[in-house]
Length: 258
Ligand code: 13P
Image (cartoon, rainbow, N blue to C red; front, side):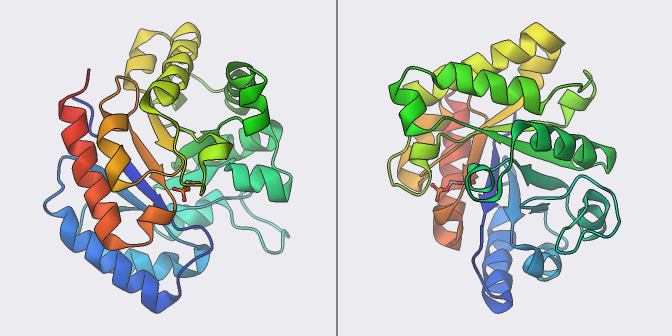
C-alpha cells in the first residue's frame, strides 16, 4: 500500500521562533505517524531552523520555489543545489500563487522541474483550474496543458520522483474544498495521462496530492478516493494540532481506500 504524503506549505508565514516551535511539535508527533510521509515547506528564511528542529525524525524538508539555473548572478533567487544543500528533499513548483502573482508559466515550470530533478530533489508540480475555467467546463483541458507542458521532456525514470499536486485555484484559502468526487475525477484523469505516456508502472506509483482547503474534517473522505495519495496543506499546516490530525485522518482514509 502506498503511504500517504502530507506536505505543509507554510507560504509566507512564521518567524524563526514560530517555525522552530511548529516543526518541533510535528517532529515529536511524527513518531506515531510512521504510516505517513510528512514534509514541511517553510519560507527560505526558516529552512535551517526547521532542519534543526526535525533532525533525527522522519519528517522531510521542502522549498517553496527555485530558479532553474544552478548558480549565477540572479539576485533574490535560490537554486536547486542550494535547496539540496539546505537539507531539502522536495520543492514546490508552479504553485498557483506564483502563476498568479509572479508570472509563472508552464514553460518556466518545466525548466524548474528539470532543475529540481538534476539536483536530486523531488518536484511537487502544482496544477489546477480557476473557477472561471471550471465553470466553462475547461478543467481537464487546463490540467492537461499544465501537465503536458510542465512535464515535457521528462523520462520514465524521472517520473519516479515527480509529485503532482492538483490544487483547484478556487479551493485555495477559501474554505471551499473540492468534493472527493470532483478531486477524484481530476486525479484519475492525471493518472491516465501518465499511464498513456509512461506506462502502467509509472502511473500506479505516481504520487498525486490534492490541495485546497484541506482540513482534519475533510481529509478522510478525500484520502479514501482511489487516486488521491496525499495532501498539500496550506492554512491548516500552520498549527501542529491540525496538521497532525490531517496526517492521522489521511492514514485512516488510505486504509479504507476504495
Ligand atoms: P489552503 O490549504 O490554505 O487552502 O492552501 C492550499 C495550498 O495552496 C497549498 O499549497
